[in-house]
Amino acid sequence: MSVNISADKGAIPAFIQESWQRCISKGLQPSMMDKEDMLGAFELAEYHDRYAELLYHSSPILKEVYHSINGLESILLLAAPEGYIIETVGDPAFIRHANNVSLRKGANWLEESKGTNAIGTAIVEKNPVLIHGSQHFHQDNHFLTCAASPIYHPDGHLLGVLNLSSHQQNYHPFSISLVQRVADSIKQSLLLSHTQKREKNLYFIYDSYPDPLITLDKEGKVTDLNSAASHVIGTSEKQVSNIVSGTDPLVLERRVSIKGQEFLVQTLGKNMEHQSSVIVRLKKQKLIDRLTTNRYQFNDIISNDPQMNQIISIAKRASALDISLLITGESGTGKELFAQSIHGYSLRSDKPFIAINCSAIPENLLESELFGYEKGAFTGAKNGGHKGKFEAADGGTLFLDEIGDMPLQAQASLLRVLQERCVTRVGGHASIPIDVRVIAATNKDLQKEMEAGEFRADLFFRLCGLSLKLPNLRSRKDLLLLAEYILADLPYKSEHTELTVEAKTFVLEYSWPGNFRELQNVLGQAAFLADNGPITRDMLVALCPVSSIKNEEGANADREPRNFQEQETKLIRNALERTSGNISNAAKQLDIGRNTLYRKMKKYGINFQK
Image (tube, rainbow, N blue to C red; front, side):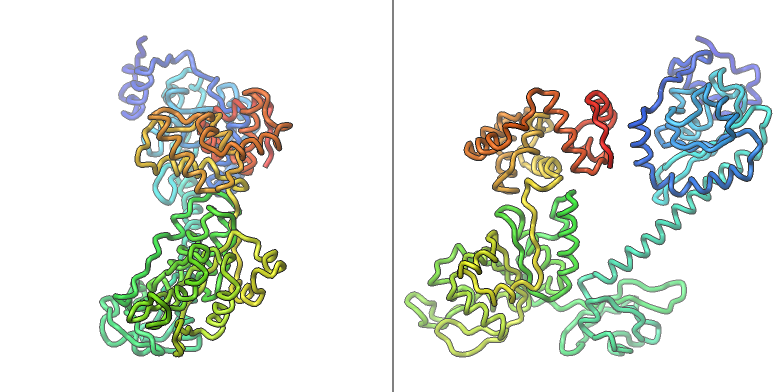
């Protein structure tokens, strides 16, 4: 096919000529325009969800602009970066005319679909463009004059395109300036919103930072301080003269003593505009022989589950409070992971984290492990004696795992230590002061243990300054995310190590009595046995305890899918429920495309409402 654009070549801008050549190279014909590339109702709703922020900030601006140009038979359009129109505001008569060429919500206006046009060409050029009359590649669009401008997110990526279309005879050279100014207004609204959010986030980070942060003016007076700083110097302090001296605060880094505690002062930032304040950090000096042993932080906790995310949020807030914590939950739910994360987020993070499993130590040795022993305390005792876990954890955190299995005699000794804040070694007489935060954990129901006389009520209330109950795996809504994380972290994983649809169904429906440890073990073995192939349901079934599967099959016999269609329908419904109807997240969990998910929802008559 040949398209003659040379006759009026001098009047056609170079970018339009280049666009026409792209259209020709893709086999487009001026007399035949694709009007079928449309989003369905489900897909359009998903686009509205994806670009909700853009729509929120642009809608009032578009309405205001249209009100000012009302009567000019025009239409304002907002398109996603993929070329799909997601919002329209305009004259009803012109909208009906525009519908004839699919210039409406849901239509795709990329160049490969609609040829040279303002929306599609602006996406390619990454600049404002004006396409007038016969400059459109397709003849159907020659009645239009259109101006479009890209809208960029504050972080720099393309967020959408604003387009103004009207009849060719309404051409005005300033229309491109109008859309550019409106696009800039939308960007400014987004920028203002993100600036406000950033300021709020910065204040939250400032206030929750584990080290003391103090904001000072140029005279050294305290203008603000976070919670950790309040704990160190007190909120009533008006001036900290030994922090800022006559030296340049930008290079300030020296040791100071505040209320008997040694700190290293480091400048984190300065208000360069007014040169009126600095933010300094007071960081406790580390002792060489008191290295912390915790390996995990909160960012090591993988979660997309609302309940778990709420617990993480509470745990972070509790980290700054120097109180005892009790973490409960089934085995394998991550109790020590939380304990170490809390320690790493606390003011004691530069001190030791010492863990002891109360159920793994013989009863006759437990007290000597916790409190230490003196020389000759018992047969086999070391000549120099031995300091216990409390002394080893001094200044830091002691994690008492499986506290529900601690013998009653040891419970009484532990209670005394927690009350008096000092320990007496086995076989000794001297009281040794200790400064330890205690985090305890158990998979038992301590209320029932107290009723049975197996756990002291006074110790329970001493340990339970705040209780965190971790959810079991079967109640979490992010099982497939956890499975993907485990598979991605395997040393022998290949690109083919993935779960089949039936395997994903099993992962979601099996109760995982061993929680994360069982999921990790089963998937690790299955990935090895799959030998670079996909992991099937049969592999997972074979690796799970037969008794657990039989019990579940008996309990769930009435609600098991009878065929693949029912099984797939159930899998989709489960994913939608876990993600509260978020199509994008549900599709990711199912490892299928959004459009595929929409088609299957339509096929099976699934109409999920948030």
